[in-house]
Each structure stands twice: as structure tokens, then as C-alpha cells.
Image (cartoon, rainbow, N blue to C red):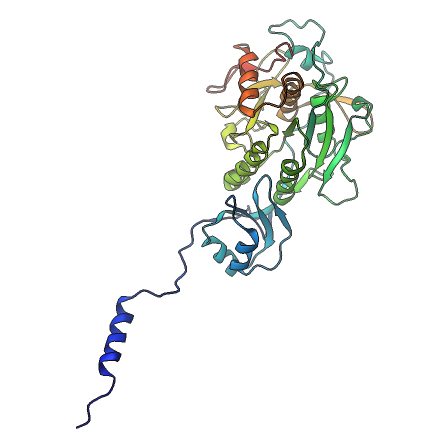
Length: 398
């Protein structure tokens, strides 16, 4: 009788196969893809944030992604790309990937409502250079912010407006609609005016730069927003401040919050002092990025009687209040009008930060934040919502 051949090797191989795991098994997915609300989603388009030091080319090669629409390396390390389900799956399994979010179209900046006739033109500036009411009818500072560069990350700036006196210029525009950094909406011009306008602004000799990512209808994509912050992080000239006055829907803030914080903190880490509007939804600002970012100085709004603005967000993520109701500001085309919103409170704080940098030099975010809080007027805001700090912005003698 012939003996079967290779019995032992076959049995051994069977035993090994039964006890050993697959040698080439991929790791389990690590992270969740954050999808935008259906009505806002740019289906199939994604933004990917990588760990510091990770090679985008290596990550893309591993995921077999051959085309990107944007790459970033300053505010964050990452890219934007159209991705298939299989490519997404590969990226989710890559330990170098921190976030994957679906791109989305966002509508609206952080508030810009008409406020009618202003009872006391210039009250906002008048209020922040004195401790208590009534107003004394003047605004006086020793510094003008000369030599400091202010980046208005917004809808653009009407650089020809006489309130800017030739100090406003275009730095960046990723909208691509032919306006080339000029403001066709009005929001960015108002923000620039509060920060550094000769008549309406805090830092009256600061250099103003238009960083435009939002179109004439206040619409922008998450990718455009990322690109604008990344450009400032990479190309700003020191000493520098920047203002971000954006308004994210609660759904977008919830879904994309960790990504938005990452980008804002990346800008701050580049050495730019960043101010952010607290938001106008009368909710906790800790739910309203980038006001909740550790590197963003978040500003709520108060009115001419030192009352909290009814629309203003609040909470522990707010750093302080600044005037944001019926504030007289420049408009596109050379005019001016009153407007309300935390959008216009935040750049007042950026203006004071510019005065500080012009006076004391290009110091750290934490140093300037500590100074702003220490010199703020305490306990004057009525209707303050706990745990919001009861502090009102002050120029503090700068």
C-alpha cells in the first residue's frame, strides 16, 4: 500500500493557517469622516488634515489619490481632494490622518444688520478709552498702530475708501470671481473700518490687508476658508494681527468644530494675534468656532448702555465684550452707516492688540491676552450671562 505523500507538510500548513492571522490585514478605520449637512455638502469633495511632519505625498500615495485641488502647510498640514469611498477608507486607516471633513458651502458672515440712525456717532471708540459712563465725546490714544500689519479675513476691503487713506491693500483672494480682493458685499470693509479706519477705527495708522475668501453673497466653502487662514499663516509680515468674523450654523459648528479649531489654532501658532467674533445666535460661544479655539481671542458684543447685546453669544469661551450695537462704520463706495454684530466688536479688540504691538513689540498671544484682560473694565456689563467674563474692552492707556 502506498503511503500518502506530503501528509505532514500539508497538516502543518493547515495548522498554521488555522492559527495565524492574515499577514497583510489593514488596520481598522481610526477616524470618522465628518459629512456636511446635505443642503450644504459639496458631494465627493473632502478636506484632510494631517499630523505635523507627515508627508502629504506619502499619505496620498498610500491612499492612491492622484489629484488634489488644494494643499496647505502653514495653518495646518493637509489637502483638499475629490475622494472615492475606497480612498476615504484608506485614509481613515492611516495613522497620520487627523481629520477628514466633507467640504461645504457656507452662507453668511457673523452678522451685519442695519441699526438705523446712530444716537452718538463714534460711541464705540469713545467707550473703550474710558472706564465708566457717561461718554466724554473723545477718543484718545498714544499709539496709532503704525508699523503693524492687520489681516482682515473676510469678504474683502474697499481699499479706495477714504477712511483707509491708502493704507489698505489686497493680499489674497481665492474666490476667483474677478473682484480681486475688493469688497462687493460690505462686511469686510466694515470690519476693516472698526479695526483700522482713520475715522471709525482703533488703530488709525495700521496697515490693512484684504484676505478675501467670501463672495458678494457672503457665500464661501470650507476649503476657501481654510485656504485664507493658511495663506495668512504662511505669508504674513510681522508684527501681525488678524480678525475672523464668520458665522457657522449650529449643525456645521457641531460637525466641523474640531477641524475649525485646528485651523484657527494653526494660524495663531504662526505668530499672528487672532481675534474672533463670538457669534450672534445667543448661544454658548463654546459651540461657535473659531471663538472656542484656544488661540483665538473671542469677543462678545455690548451696546451704548453697557448692556449685553441680546443677539450676542456668551459663555466661558468669550474673553471679553466690546461695542457691537449701532456702531458707525465705513461702507463700500465711500460712505458710512451704523451696523450691529459681534463681527464688529472683534476687530475693535484686534485694533487694541495692534496698538499693543506698536507700543511693546511683537510679543506672544498669551502676553497680549493677559494684558487685554488685565486692562479691561470690569463689572460694568448689565445682563451678563454667566459664566461670561464681565469685562469690557479698554485701550488701557495705549
